[in-house]
Length: 363
Image 1 (cartoon, rainbow, N blue to C red):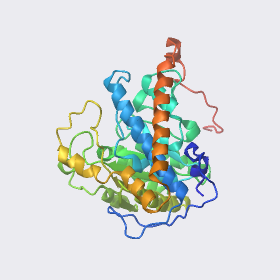
Image 2: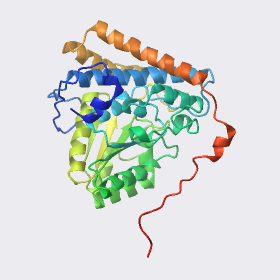
Image 3: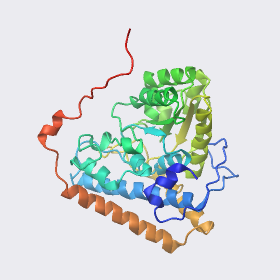
Image 4: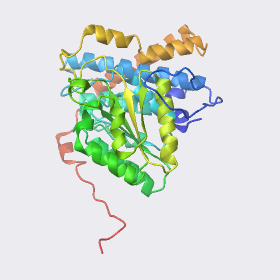
């Protein structure tokens, strides 16, 4: 069984005897006819994990409207399979890095919702001590390396993290997420070039929700099938139906095998969709309500729910119990954040620099 699933707190109520059957396969932008057979634990992990992301983000949106959460706030509603499918496919030592739409990834990795909600509130009990807020969540314990506000800045960082794993011979990799708008940054191309040259164990993921901040991909690029951008560097790449968590898992698992074998990076284009705007201040005039509703018919959580029921993995009553549990976790996180204190002003001068004694000289 994948180590990440065994360690994840969402599995505290499940049996540990079943095995996950992993089959490397080439993912397509459309759901496959022949699917990998996954275990009961995996399906229930996906359902509970994605449901927690969804409920947490819905609550964050409400709290932002109440001005409990300040600054910028970018919600992940609709994109949950992008995180859940990767976590189930990778192992405990692998590293994750993403942009500023970053609440869901640490939730999928096992960061306690209390710590993330407190961070959104700017409280000292937050996972980044209240100093990062919505856009700069960081949890080294769970191998989540941010949360980065500068568009595309995390891409060369992700390559660097992967290079460190290669240098230290850990056998681990880094999965680096970015939005479709970030591929216009020069650092994206520089990172892809060096990653192929040095065979860095990194999986680059474009979460293509079609609009970047608010402009259609079709209006900003001659190349609209973004996975083809890897062709310039002879890097393997493929489109993935990222509204389907099973397809996400298979694509990431396949890329991970390549990375761990020393063959270098892969670029995956996760074709997904956000139901909310780019941020809470987005009027969303660039798309129609009908388009949003059309994508909701392919909702990743509902697809997993249907699979669970069709395969008789759990009953409606059991799934309702999971939903009640998740609702309780989210409400608890709000209470925790409300009751926590703001950081002391003196904390502004802490955690700025770290002195490191490097094991080499320039001689």
